[in-house]
Amino acid sequence: MDDRVLMATKQWTLVQPVVSAFVGAIVRDFAARDDVLQEIAVAILESYDHYDASRPFQAWALGIARNHIRIYLRRQKSDRLTFDEKVIASLADTFDGMTEEARALDRLHVCVSKLDTKALELLDMRYSQDLKPAAIAARIKSTPNNIAKALQRIRDVLRDCVRKQTAAEAYE
Amino acid sequence: MSTDWNQQINRYLDDELTTAELPEFQEWLLSDENHRTQFAEVALLHNQLHGHMLARTAIESVEIQYPVVVAKSSSSAWWVSRRLAPFVAIAGTLLLMLLFWRGDTVVIAAQAELEKVIAANQLTEDRTYVLEVESNDLGGARQRRRPSDEQRPPKPPLNGARLFVRGNHQFVLQRVLDNGDTFLTGCDGVSSWSVPHKGAVRVSSDPQEFNRDVPGHEYSMSLCQLDDALKQLNVAYDIFVSPQEPGDTDGDEAEATRLLVATKRKGYRGPQRVEITYQQNSRLIEQIRFIDMPYGEDRLTVRMSLTDLTPLSQDFFQHTAHHAPERKVIRE
Picture 1 (cartoon, each protein chain N blue to C red):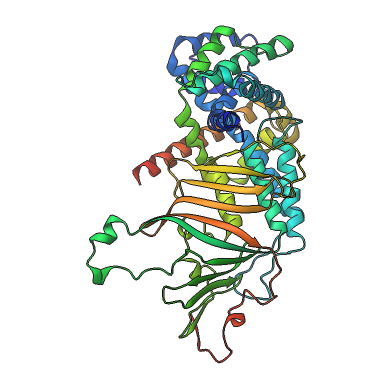
Picture 2 (cartoon, chains in turn blue, brown; picture 1 turned 135 degrees about the horizontal axis):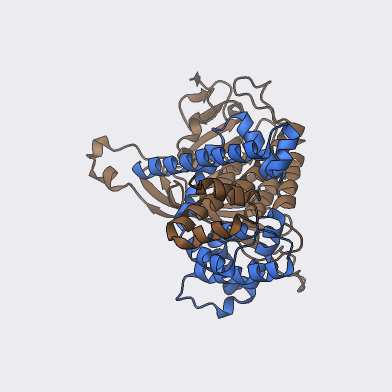
């Protein structure tokens, strides 16, 4: 086994949730996000020889992610909501400090299991079926605004639940 | 009216924000690190929810198509469709692979790979493992502080034990005591039991009863319920898998193996690290090492090596197969 690949894989596995969320925050289409993530993973493996092990791996990976987001945005001009480079750079720094928050989301399955059926159906349409609020509204005869607010409430509930779970485990 | 920025973050992620609103939203993000942190928190959740809901939907769709019935109280009612189970597992795995493994990629989708390993091992009927205790940090400080008459009796030794497994719920663990006597514990999927060398056989309607002195039981990683233990890795561990080796070219008949290493995340209980060596093509597990595994007040490093795949007799996992008919049986 190649030690270099093994080490790169291990480090990538650890930082992947943060890098994935960073990419998803800019590239909001889930399928496109996955494509960009794959390119980032390949780039990390290919350029691992240039990685300075004395520096944090996550910051290095986020730098590679920024480059690949830039390439994607240049190719994909149809995205009407695209952040400026300055915002993207600032967000990369912010996401670099979100490791603990990403880890806390390991408890998400506990919190999702507490949701009622209606909330789960909304999440299913939004995330499993990749429908936007307008499409969900058309399907269940509601308004896009109501659906967007309902999704926001569910996310607020989940964030609160994850925080409480984390605090309770820390207390134990 | 002041802007509800939490709402704007959610609208942005749902693609509801208008292009006219974008400049103000960007200014808000740039103006304060706390704003960006607030945004990143919601984005992290949004990202994680996507993966979580996809997995949930995939699993539910498989369960609906092939319901698996498990009842604890009656031997006739307890059945897992053993013919269907491997196909269910593979269908679920393929579904997850389709969802997470998009196209040709060198990215090692470690969690999906673990699901494949689990599915492949559900295909094998009966497996026999030998357990070796590589290191044993005996008795914790608390145990050593206790007066000798208050110390718990030693557990039957694990080193050299043989573990026979069928599916995820049936096992026989054969341990040899220091005096050479054999001590058996097992579960036939409905009831669990212990058969000492001498004395009464004990049978419990609780399938977990005689699993309790097996390492890992208290944190859902019992050595005797390997499938459950492996699934726990996807919940509580960071996983990485060694890359696939190129095809065999030197005529060596031994199949290439891969190594999956799981490192425990902070906040969870269990062994610090689990190393799984499995065959590259068949994904049959050859060896599992549970490193620094809590066991009562001890910490063990245990290696489980697959030694045999020979089918065992149909009644092998029932206590009656392991003692004379006249032995006294105490039902608990």
